Image (cartoon, rainbow, N blue to C red; front, side):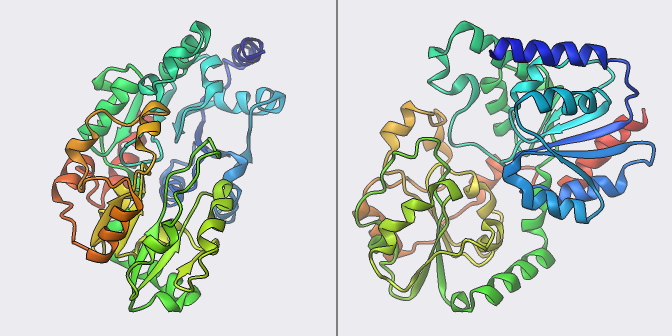
Amino acid sequence: MKVIYLWLIHFLSLINIWRPKNKVIYLMSFDNNVDFIKQLAQRLPNTFEFVVLYHPDTEAAATDLAAFGIRTRPFKDGIKLVLDVVPLIMGARLIFCDNYYAFLGGIIHLKMTKIVQIWHANGAIKKFGWEDPTTKYRSKSDQKRFQEVYNQFDEYIVASKAMGHVFTRSYREDFDKIKLLGYPRSDQYIDSGWRQTARERIYQAAPELKNRRVILYAPTYRENQAFKLPAGIGDALAADPNAMVVVKFHPILREKENLMRETGNSRIKFYHQLATNDLLTVTDTLVTDYSSVAFDFTLLPNAKSLIFFMFDMKNYQNNPGIQDNFMDWLPTKPVTTIHDLRDQIIHSESTNFSDFNHYWNTYNDGHATDRVIDRYLKFLKS
């Protein structure tokens, strides 16, 4: 079925191959690059039409972009994608992608069109692509299809050589495709004006967080919802009686909150309406595991300590996998037990992020958006 689907995409792209290349497309499956998209739209030449194709999970961000005057269209795998989206893609001179998109494997990629992987994270703790231990167990046809998608990308925007090497290993690409420009969405964390506005939004909605130590627990999204949080995690996170604990799960995992709600601790809060990016600006201690949120947090001046609570590290190393050298560059040694988590919360030792940021946030200096837009405007005008 997948082969037939990709063949249909290939066929439709063939009959649309002569469309004028007068569009810029942004494929959006994450909602964390909205500011970059808006700035790109403002600076594009009038001769190009800008369209954001968005996954239904990012509808709120798409609504924001539409209100800004940007054309948006939803997409998901299916016949509608084949009929509606492929003609748009074939009319593009420049395509930005924030993720792996399987349908790209069937597209005819002309030399005059550039496809750019902008990704959705500053760095990577977990593995993906060929580095994912489960990939070797996939069929030869699946592996061939994966690589066909990887090969469609002409360039990769990254914030460090470290992330560049992750892509060369994970997608089996040459390093000359890596562009050391910085991640546009990192600019906000360095912008004092944005930080102040974000804090005001938080304190307006949650005034109880003001003038308190804030501990944010934000574990990574897991496709396998069967994982279990260890008993006692709520009490451990709230071990500092002077701290407020904010728990932020991916929406699909919110049922995991029940374990912590059962403690009845009034200092443990769940703010579904507040964005993680905003919450980071009032956070003193971030507790996470394999999430890329760690790479954002360390850019903030309010970041005091970072705890990696990897209670399922052995299992996670098998599926989906953890970067082989992660122990060499994590700013703090991971903890795996409730006892150690509680101990770290109580002691609240400051973390030095200098080496970590030099390794992963090398080019995240507050000017990444300008560098990225300048590069691709030059391409469009060439």
